[in-house]
Amino acid sequence: MVSLSEPRSYEEITANLNKEDRIALTCCNCCVRFCGSTGLEPMYALAKKLKADGYNVGKCYPSACLCVHDYVRNMKFPEDITAVVVCACIAGEASVYQRYHDDIKLISTVNSLGLVLGDRRVGNLKLMMPFDKYRDLKGHEWQMMSGKRQEKEQIPVPTEE
Image (cartoon, rainbow, N blue to C red; front, side, top):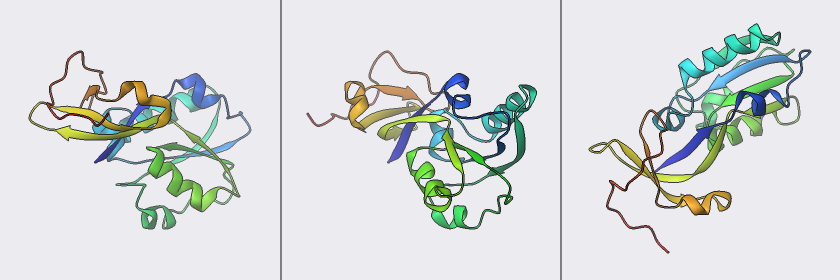
């Protein structure tokens, strides 16, 4: 199963940043890319926008899969950073948090909705196990890679009541 996420607004992301922060960005290129909520290109676009708006952005650190803690443990962030913008689902965010929670602030760029089942034949992801906040979305589908919510069910797999 894959974690389903949707992007947060730019205003939500920058609400916890200030212009004095020394910022690094890191992203996962797995679940969040399949969901269309973030990935490599969106991370670089966000870094560019933050810089244009006067934020002190350093390097971007792409990863194949941030939920694999070995990848996070081996990242070499500069010692002077004060914030990391994490472009990953809740599992990747938790992995980064485990390493850096005492030292720097972490800002997530997505809301993780729950776990999905994917069907490449129809190109959709179906929310099977939503997190409590998103229970009303159980059984809904999103298009892979774009994150667009679908109007009708195309994956005929029942969800538990």
